[in-house]
Image: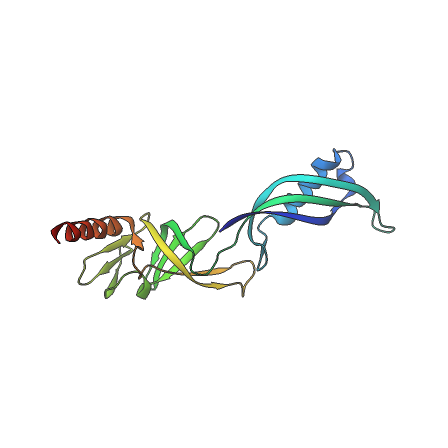
Length: 187
């Protein structure tokens, strides 16, 4: 889920930025500080959307930099358990598929791609043995988050499944919907 979060923090502005407008210098430092920032509390920070307030600066003896109390807003993606996500397949491997869900890629283990025995071909395609369903790079899919790990903070892991109702490749979902509509009309 994407969030806009308001945060208050002290921002260190080094002397080389003293010639720049204070708000601009604080924004530059915040963008540097939160570039590729990942935490369990905030999730994956996408970017700073704006500064609400910058307080008076103070200089700490022996440092030379100015510290400003700043209130700012940022956009963050924090994956949540059971969240349904949309994305496109970015890579297929022998153990599963990676789904680009925006801020990060999620991994769908081969056993979670479809309700079928799945084979991997050297042309990077996953195929269902009985259903003949095919999953390849750039396919648009709907999946559910079933695991989240921040063990490596710089590289969070998101586990996904497509083996639940109304999940999977878009074409599969459309075919299932048409089949269900047809069955309802026949009753």
